[in-house]
Structure formats: C-alpha cells, structure tokens
Length: 164
Image 1 (tube, rainbow, N blue to C red):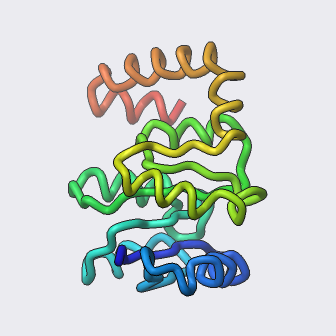
Image 2 (image 1 turned 45 degrees about the vertical axis):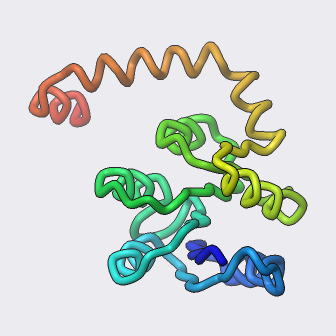
C-alpha cells in the first residue's frame, strides 16, 4: 500500500481526497497538512510514496515545496492539484516535472487514474493540463529561453535583476 500525504489549505479538498481514496487497497492517506511548512516538517519525519500538493498554499507553496523535495532528492512522487490556470504559476510547477498534474475541477474523476499511472512509472497530465501546454507551446519556449538566460547570470546579477 502506497503512503500518501495531502497538502492543501482547504479542509474540504483534503476530506474529499481522503473520501475518494478511502477503501482503495492501493493507497493509504497517511497524513494531511494545511500548508507547505507543515508538509515539509512531516516529510522530514516520515517517508511518503506520493505527495498530493496544492500549488497555492500559505507559508510555503507547492512549487517551493517541490523544489525543496527535488533539492534533497526525496523520492516521493509529486502530484500537483490546483485550481490555478494562470500560466506563470502553471509553468513554475511544470518546470519541476511532476509525476501528475490535475486541476481541482476534475480531480474527483481523474485522481485514481492519475495515481495508477504514476505507479506504473508514467507521467499523468489531465486533459486540461495537456491543452494548456499545447495552447501555450510558444510561450513555454520563450519562458525556457529566459529561464536559461537567467540561470546563466551570477548570483549577484540575479539579485540585481530581481530588485529591478
């Protein structure tokens, strides 16, 4: 049974995910937290196979949490669950290369399929996520180019640019 942690600042979303996974022999909701700091603290104490992360949370958002996990090479699979459709937020999360990406509007219909696919080693993108990527491919290419140019700057040059 795969251990799942849910990080979302809305109790209703956490309860909905727990209800959906309740009774599923493949997944056990081992923990739930309401912000990124709590999630980080919990992940420092325990191992989880899958983290279902809201992108927009207080104290530490899902993107920051995903970067932290990657930086420490934590092997927990990341599934982003969001209601954000603004492109920059989506792009920041997308750069992390999550195992799954769902919009909350359709999550109840797709979450089990998403989890099953990532357990088979596949990335799962909801149809809405795929459409957002396809519709914004030129923008993604531009962002990637800008991101690579930014990363080529020294730390001090990056700090100055942020201040501007």
